[in-house]
Length: 142
Image (cartoon, rainbow, N blue to C red; front, side, top):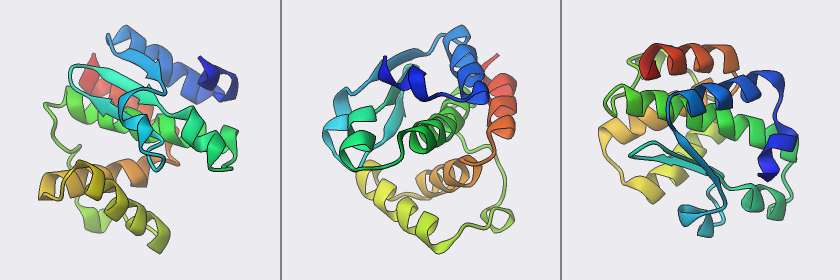
């Protein structure tokens, strides 16, 4: 899989945790046909990275592969938590304007309902907090 070459140490450990939690990891399948999708998690325990979309979009592979792993791993933790948000109130998770726009794009893909907004907000908030993402994966998936 292409994305392994770009993983930093924390992302590598998160991927190992997901494999131990019985997630199936794939690359460039399904929703990856939508060029705006960098990754997704679907039930039951399907974890996908869309490296072709990151590469074809001209994005920095190291940055966005790792960020996508963190984002999608948070979604994996939410799935392990019975598809529920982790539970932090949105007001406690401030996001810059561009991330709020990213939430709107994601919601167009998955459907606009309140729990989806909360889950996406959490995932975007934790994209740059890999140690916390790993703690949530370990808390909810083991």
